[in-house]
Image (cartoon, rainbow, N blue to C red; front, side, top):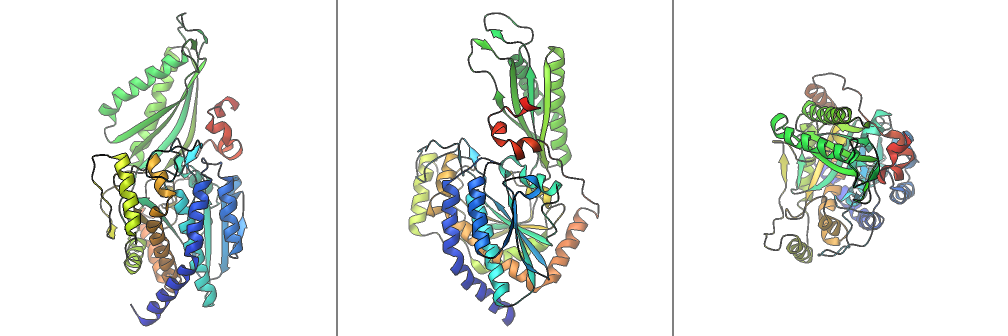
Amino acid sequence: MNASVSKAKEQVHHIFDEVRADIEHYFTQIWQCAELPCLEFESVRLLGEWLQKEGFTLERNLSGVPTAFAATWGQGGSTVGFFAEYDALPGVDNAATPYRKPLGNRAGHGCGHNHIGAANIGAAIVAKRYLERNNLPGSIRVIGCPAEEIVWGKVAVLERGGIGKPDVLLTSHGDYQNGAMSRPCQSVFSGEVRFYGDSGHAGISSQCSAMEALQTAMQSITRAQHEHFPDATIRSIIRRGGDCPTVVPSEAGIWFSTRSDVYSRAQDAYDFVMEVCGRVAEENNLGLKREYISASHGYLPNDTLGELLYRNMEIVGPPQWSAEDVAWQQELVKAVRPNGEFSLDRSIAYYQEGVDYYGQDDGEVSWHIPLGRVNWAVPEEVPIHHWSYTALSGHKAGFAGPLMASESLALAAVELFHDSNLIDLAKAELQQRNKGQIPAPPKVGAFDALAQTPELFWDGSWMDEM
């Protein structure tokens, strides 16, 4: 590291110390107002006001999505983008306690997006202050993205041009390891099906039962998956199934998602699901609606950005958990796995091999714009998308990981501003990896429902309006 770069890194560290308290403040603020995808109005207000206070120009209602925004600062030079996420999950509400204690809220941050939004915005603010104090050219764009938990927000904003034209994008996420990621994750397809039949007394046999059709379709799909799609995963939840067993419901709905390491196989599995539902409806003389929600490719790796992030993570070092933080996490693990071990990654690594189990809507964006990602570790015994992760994301014992990620992203952004050759290399790598082809347009559905009537989407009645 030459002297000028070393001096820049030292300055970034001091600026990060200035911003750290604000980042921690918004960790807690966003956690306390946990909101379902596309209903994140309070989260957007809080984060937007923070960015405006820091001198960013805020564009609300980005791409016609009320809870999406873009915040920009600077001019000239390269443009570094940061994704901010802030949506929560249904059914995982919990207090910030190391034991089960529901608060009665609709949603909880069981994936730590309260950390992502604050950590990534904090990194953008640190980079902005650095450029400002050193009178350097450069632009920063923060894209506030709703509905990542249903793999929708970034796909919808990308499809409508709201991502803009940053040269590169940086982001972070909680996981089970501390590292810079340059490997694929799962591709995901999602859609909903609604069967329509006769309603009436449960004691009278009906040849047109929507609920029986739904059950038949699910059984057929489950039996066929192992034979036809061993390389894909099909998940579902019943969205409409009636209110009382003595009343045959007139409609029954199911929400499917399919995923695979290979995009085409995730799509094949999704098409198969829709075909089975269509065949069952036809055989039973039922009405049927099939509505697409979204699809996302898995990550397109980018070693240029991955290596950049890794070397800056090495400067920051692993998360600095206190003894009290670790003790609290151990108590939480005992509540989840009473007879289990406690496993927490305290190292830093660079991940290139294999495929991650999760799907992300920024995976879709990575095929259009070079994207780099830092992950931070939580205990392996704490399931992601679970009440225990909500508890951890609301407690200070969970702060050290995203703080490490935030400072690493800020350092990497400053290095990109100083060395535009890295941006050229990242763009060239993207072109090489996608073989120079223009990616297909993003696939997104349910736009009117999620952008205009998200409450109807979440109570399951959105298809009634179609």
